[in-house]
Image (tube, rainbow, N blue to C red; front, top):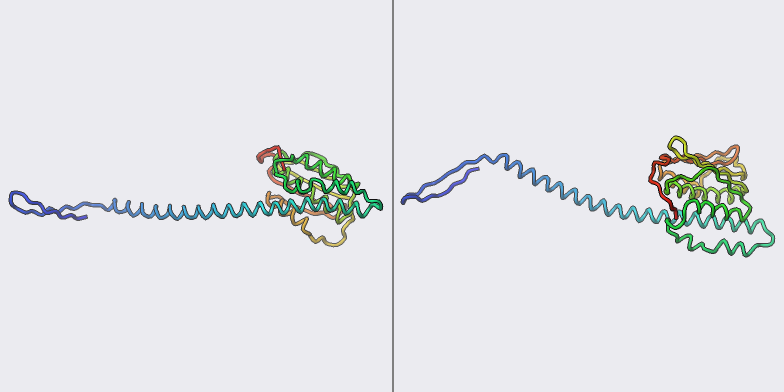
Length: 242
């Protein structure tokens, strides 16, 4: 960089010319400008990401609410239909009791009821129409996994009674080699044709897939759902479900 300066000294005029090497300073200035541009770009990307996360979070809440409504309403309707189909003299008190608390259950927050209480409630409701649900083992220690298992049990039991007219449902839950295994079999009608997954199976697959798990369906000797969820007890533990 060159600079020119006029200097007056002892009635004479002088010109002072100086030369400085600012190559490094110039390079640093350009580098800082580029970094500033990059930071602004990253800041805008972060803002967009935050907005998208809020959108995804709301959509996930909507999807969860839809699946929860499907599970609970499907269970109650299945039980009510079985009562109507099997009894000549309808027990109206029993039918009425099945509708009590339905709205509250649909609105219930996930922290209000433990997974074990949810499971026992499912067993009691189906027992009222003569469907015996036996559970062997323990629910996962992780709240998320335990809630997932309860949701699957509810949906699978509903499907077994509604479509297979099952009267006995056997469930086994175990933790093996840091993976949770859930098997659900029933004594309902044996399917001889290839199974076409309906909304119930699709919902189960979607829920299990969200936990990086797998779902297998076996038709012989009994209709059986086999679910594997990785992680075992390594996932964060909790105490409540709904």
